[in-house]
Length: 490
RNA sequence: CGGGAUGUAGCUUAGUCCGGUUAAAGUGCUGGUCUGGGGGACCAGAGAUCGGGAGUUCGAAUCUCCCCAUCCCGACCA
Image (cartoon, rainbow, N blue to C red; front, side, top):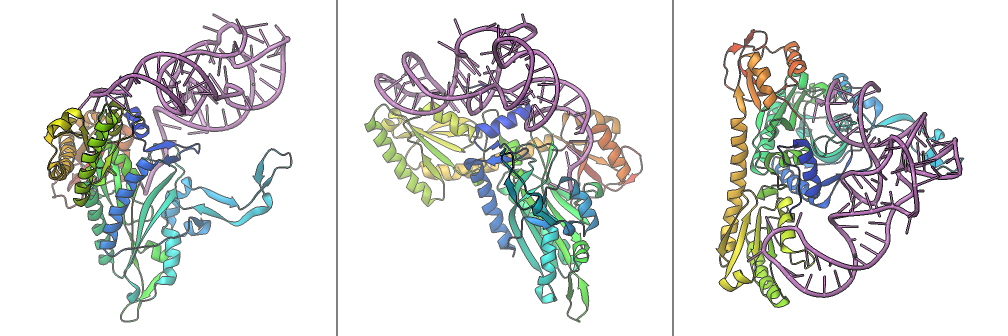
């Protein structure tokens, strides 16, 4: 009997939560808003992390590590930055506990109060720029291209597994440049790097663009972003790259001497992607049977399940699969033979399907006799019988095909759910169904806010390099030079 | 922080309104036998201070009060 799980149609948000548990990705911890990332979930994150790390290094960046704690005073050095984060900071006020006098356990020792409170980093601009002040003196020290893999804490009011947690894992790049132009180029380079990664590896199509002033990072002059459309029609911000101008250089007094010996403030960028990408991955490809993983980031690409009635059959089947394992290994394909005798085949089928393993092989006495193997595709949920000999070549090419087909499927979903709208009445009606809406906007904060209040939709981005198209703002009728992308977002 | 709901075995829940044997079931877990081509069957077992505290009562999972936690809807969300 197949266990009954909630479908996407019945309750999308419940489906998401159940899937995270069922695929063994993560679970809620006893700490509010925090999650435990389980080994399988972490393995997927590691695949993403490793690939991104390669790409950062290929583009000249180095990894470093800065402290978890930030002196409270640092945060307030950049005015808009503190405004953006102050409301969600965890604060360390004491450094010691002691036994309660009534024996009820440990209590905070009031004598151990910190002179200056420490903030648990919500992001590291301030502590990093405080170091950069000492690292940068001359144009010869630039550009400085640093990345950090870390955890950060943002005390969110409401949390969801992977999509918004109080503590999350991410990478944050922080670069310093001699010229404005170079810093902007870096910001854009990372935008394209992120888009390339999310599309090529996660098979998730993204829109590239810039944020409106209202949605911009606290302390940035320009925020570039990639936006993905989830299956339920909501948008998910998958990554951001910020042009920080000289804001942090001025706040932390970071100047360099140029070739003429003149002192200038340096130009900065910062950029990050987080474990939220896991949420994007889940909500882009998965179905009512569970997780669906693109081969390039699946921790396991091929699983083999033997079906047998006795030990001899098992041994014979395992011999075949072990030979295949070596061939696949040579082709760079990850493979696991699940010969665990405690689980029956049907259970294993369901299990690996839940976990999104792209290809499943099964071999039983019938196949053994005929030299065949059954191959099931996770993405299409189809299965076929193939000759066992030479199956490795087919598997190798099929993985590529699955990767492409997942991307195309997601792209098609986005295309059919992207609409041009010109009247606000239409917009208000259609936005309820979800999707991306390309509409004209007069460029004012007031209009943006009004739309958000009335429809809960926000401007996800002003498309990057979008062709100019004159039109009239759908709300105020004022002039507009190009369409922007509206959606309800996570 | 406002509105609503919930807390009973690892998990999902019944029992609570109307107090009364040893707190029940499914699933999961342990051992065993049969099995094995889509989440197996049977047998035996372990597993709960009924979220915490105080009170009412001969007697509390059940009634009263206080506290805590979680979830949903708002507000908030680089």
